Image 1: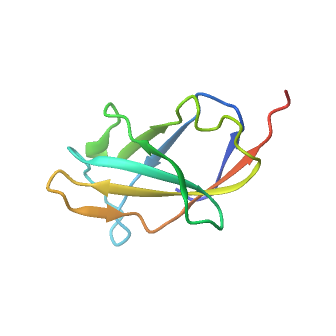
Image 2 (image 1 turned 135 degrees about the vertical axis):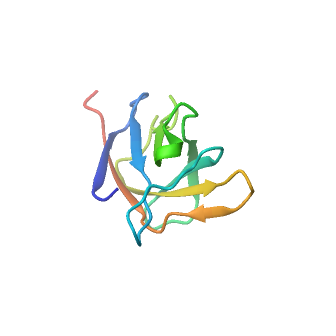
Length: 111
């Protein structure tokens, strides 16, 4: 999950696919029955702009979460650097936050 994810302001259908693995042994995190969220904010700020929830149809048992941006998430979004944090709330209520921060860059649309 490293690198910079590139988005375009005004787009209504981008998706981010993340495979969640354990740092110590590389095994996938079984997220069956969990709620997996991606919090999105402007880099250097503390306010969450929006939250994406992984699709229920994703392969959560095999550590795969797919986050689809809603039609308004990137509307009128200023170009610049953003970041995301993935949080897993397991079915027993235990919370697990992925340490690695996701980096996004948003550019303006041509029209």
